[in-house]
Length: 212
Image (cartoon, rainbow, N blue to C red; front, side, top):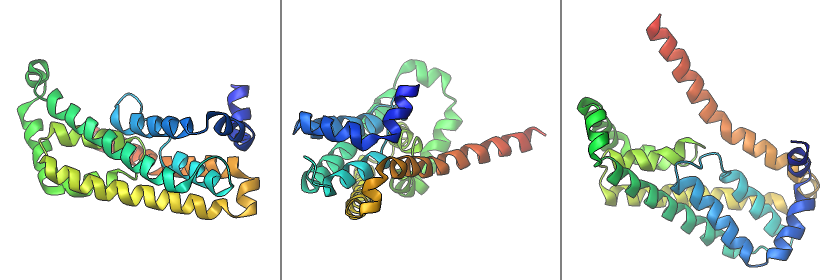
């Protein structure tokens, strides 16, 4: 635990030598993290926008990373990840076991939700950690039209990557940010988790209200 805290509070001391050693393999590693976070349901805890911000910030400090390569790497990784997750949902709902145990009325409600709010869920869900991992899966399971999902997914990912990388690259040129990179990374990570935490709290309070 102490080693983890040491790394998190001194990121620049660990990452710069690592990225220099890896060279172009750094892009493969970053691609894999973003892909796994969005494409595999079992990895929702991996960093998303915080990683994009951090990598873009380091690109501005003249490390081995190039922002012109980072942006398409992040974009392609997130789009492919969401598409894979969507396809998993499409095929998962067809399993006989799931069909037997998932009430038909809940399937209809899910389909109605995505037919009415699917575009907003796909686009804005991209900005909420944890939630964004399950939105494509749910959209696929709810039989959201593939073309509609692809369109809104491209738009959401485009905005997500553009904002995260632009902010990271801009702030990376500021000396104060360079000197306190670890604190900024942890701060963004904490801020990114706030929406998911508030949604969980709201659902818990709402459930207790109905029980009482």
